Length: 328
Image (cartoon, rainbow, N blue to C red):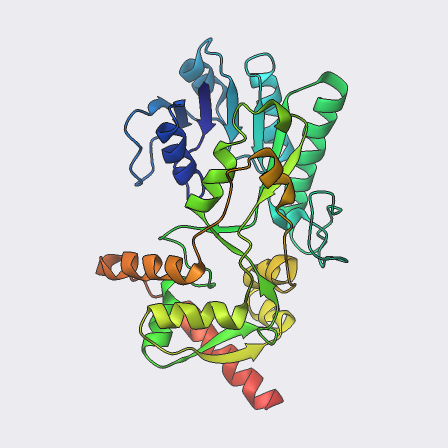
């Protein structure tokens, strides 16, 4: 099977690239060649910029693929370009959407693939919804062979789930307070990228996936309090948690606030029945306690990775000080 990944070296896609190669797939990666991540042995590299028509035409020539996966499409305009480029060139086109496109807050849990799409809080999610709608229209009206995949919060050893990355670990190790939104009791799902890859690679070239939508997540449920405590334990530290409402955080940092109000503030539980029916071998087996140890080991193995954001540190101190003075 000949497969093209547009991207293929990101947090989620890197594990999918490796597993695809392990399964004997003839894998091509189209990117600008600017990643620091290693590429699996056996991958064909096509250097080009998907946003530049001349560049992409030169890189692809007349090549045909069984499957094309776009990991880096975020707007309807980018989808329109993909439709023009890959119509008649592939038997399956997979769009990487986002579970944040689901109704927020959800009226009913667990979330299934038929849960309505509506996120009034986050522009990123609304753009993904517009992409999905364009692709479904192309499938219904012209039989464009689309499959839509909605990852939730998926991580690898380089990605902490906390806003601010290593800055939060540094605060924990120094005994400083850290912020958890709300009361920390909302439920969240963290999926290791190697687990995600098991479900995803099973969709490649799968005729039962054409015209369908899937989310692929772990079944492990954690509160945000537990997530911070697990990170602290992996870092041989303690989490001195201060609970601050998401809307107050948003007043200080609109970008951080948008990711909370549009995604992380609300409990999200996913029903993975559909992906397990189509890919019977899929099972998420890596708990976050194990993943957190991988993350801390990655940071500790190279001090250059331990970047502390002084501006964020100052803002966190200010938020905590203001909130405690006002409400406690």
